[in-house]
Image (cartoon, rainbow, N blue to C red):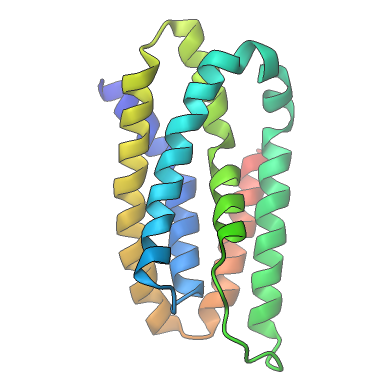
Length: 177
């Protein structure tokens, strides 16, 4: 149980950082949008190990080979766009958090959970309770990230967009390693 909780915390660190970044960059998110972050990240972090557990033999080699690259590309594209928005003073348009951004972030931060599900199958772990623990720990930690990001975004102002983009790019690069 403790091992699964520690795995859940480790898996949720990317989601934590992305939630922190998003809540800094999109200060005008509605309450519904804010809550969508921990819900989506928790859901994806719980579903992906389950998929890995049951479908791992079919896709494990592909996921192992390309998960870092896929995560890096998705997060780098989002991060670069954020940095462009932050640097370009001409565009004073409000940054809008969308369902597309949420889903891309949730997928990018949960691909490694698929590989964990494959290893759970090899170990004979109980997947439903393991996935629930991973989902719950991700949800709780991203709720904290949401609060911290809102506070930091207010303090940093317009610089938060650039910092948020840099954070996403760093997480993407980390996925390659």
